[in-house]
Image (cartoon, rainbow, N blue to C red; front, side):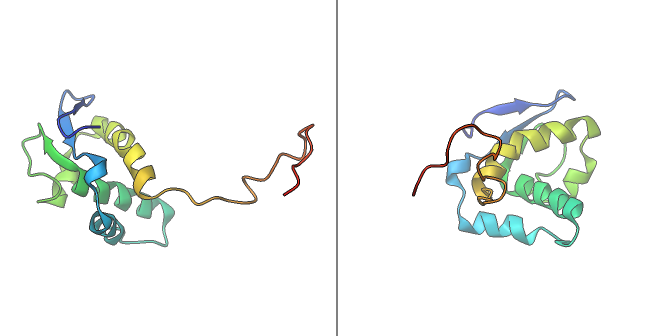
Length: 119
């Protein structure tokens, strides 16, 4: 995703996202600091999306301040664009916050016909 790519949204609006390869440690910390209720998985997820949008959106067609300047702008976006925005930033979220390996989840399927390899 380049800094010049515009992502068209269902409402007809567009957003332009920062090149994810320009993100730094401080950007990750800003996103993490945006999580207000880490005890609530849903609340933390929503806060994380808002935090990412604050860091990533460098331009948009809405007649509102950018989220980095005024986070409240996100509350005024059309509902129809919400899922599209989340989907657009999901690859960047995974890049900033990769999932840790889960030995139980990643374990070999016991129903598999092949033998486990010897380490």
